[in-house]
Amino acid sequence: MKKIIVLLVVILLLTGCNKDAKIVKKIELSNSGCIVDIEEDTHKGFHNDGDYYARIKCTDIDYDKLSSNWKKLPLTNELNKVMSMEQCDDEDCKDVYLKYNIPKFTSGYYYFKDRHSESKNKYDDSEINNRASYNFTLALLNKENGRVYVYELDT
Image (tube, rainbow, N blue to C red; front, side, top):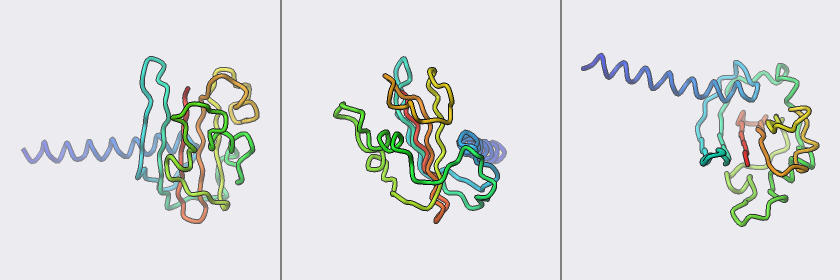
């Protein structure tokens, strides 16, 4: 019986670590001691529409070795529109910062990846608000405390 309990604990620990590693890899952070401490996923339905949010605590980020796809804040105007949900007329739309209690900060970086099928450059946000749907990943990295806020939207 003890062996089964130990095996289950090991499986749970490994599964959690793999989840953290998968999210960190998705936003091109590596070897940064990151752990997901809050996660929420609303994807559902036939088309799997919804959003995903994760708050990650990183303890060992080497800012000099960030992927070139990480840009210094502030966000572009297009990404600010997305985060404030300016383009949305649905009453369920809420400012992403308010919805997920993301603090606004100026010392840090952001990572953007356009996953839309019409995207010509997956790291360029200039056309994001000129389509009928959204499919993107946006991460905000607070340099002062090592927190990363990941937001994905699929409509």
